[in-house]
Length: 402
Image (cartoon, rainbow, N blue to C red; front, top):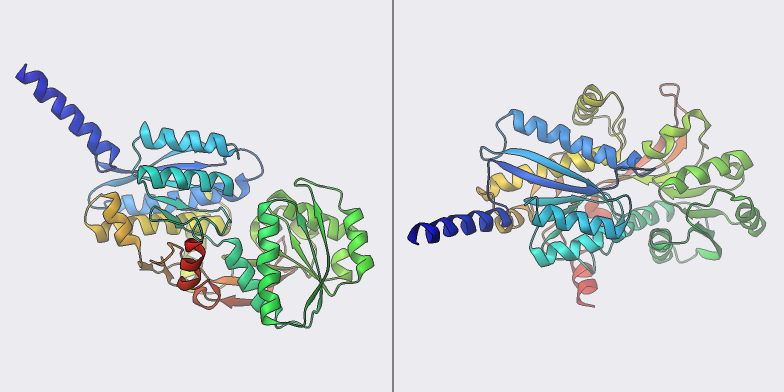
């Protein structure tokens, strides 16, 4: 009987340790993200950037003598599937941490789960500002920019332009409205002279933009905020190019200058489109960024997109946080990650303790052709450091209090 009790004690102890994410010879990271369909143009770079950094860390002996490993689950861009996959990774795979996802609804659902299960969740591409804003908590971290950040940075750039009469157009879903409001609401504060002539909203996946372009041109705005995401980015740019829209009125899209948007179009992308992104492989022209690009191209045979930066830095923050904690423990990991600063290809990054949002530079530029590449790049790039445009800690606290 005594042997049975001792055996059960060992079993229960083993399961308890695994459940708290501190067992074994590895640090096990669970990825829940979209790995089928159009979203892979973003998510594959996140995963590849993470793998590149993790493999380099492992080659040097790992973290506290443990290697970083990863388990991948495809949520097929469906929140219910993503939540199921996250539960499986936590309860069956016993991962130490979760990483993902590009779908904001999925990210918010998984965030709630991780809060309940007390598992750190590092969000790598979802754009909802609610994730680290009003719905933020101890167990969720933002590793990329969100709509509020993009909106504020863009407003700072546009406030210095001569445009007064604006029009808003975009995909009729949360992201579209959030990015449009994020830009124009802050723009009104910075430049009270601007006014909104009207708005056009179309269903997600729309490919015929002719009626909307006709409506916009008839209103004669000085500038258009085009709030598209995912595949809508390229679809609208193709419509702008074919109709000459970009030559008649300047417009903005978040990620319009990102390689994810411009690369697939080659030389056929429209010139003169304003956009923002956190990463450009050719800017800044520093030894750190050049080294990152060279390493990524050597590993995968292509230029890194913004997702590669997010994934790479996620692995770096994970490793350094556990090293700082001196123990593979979730709660100590969180304490160590709060306020941690690390060098990156685009400058030093800090994980703010007040909202668990990483500070990223925002690059604002305009599409232009280049003799060096077979796709368009960004010209006239202006850089905004995170501290100059991100919501203050007081604003985050107020949003969460509501």
